[in-house]
Length: 146
Ligand code: NI
Image (tube, rainbow, N blue to C red):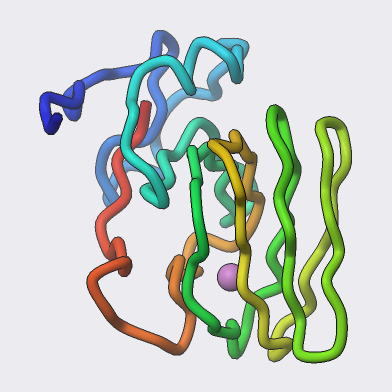
């Protein structure tokens, strides 16, 4: 199903375009992660729910294995809201459960894997591409806000 609410605008005004980050009024709208996650069903397609200091807070639903990749310049925070996420590294696997987070340092190869559907929050610089140094069918270059 592809009928996602791409035009959705957060009350209080999440940045919908690249150009208005300087002059938009400060937003005091709270974000309910559960509500945001209920707005879409596709996997491995992060949505932006907040921005601050050049960083973005994103939510995503994931299931199954992602691709091995690393981020040359960005540290990447994973926080599990619901479900279970294995973060595979070349020498170990670390499992995150609800309420647990991990920061993957820049340059470190990783592959997120989820056995069932898992809901996660990502916190990382705006420049971060979901597949890092890899470009394939999983790469999402233009992120929507919800
Ligand atoms: Ni990554």
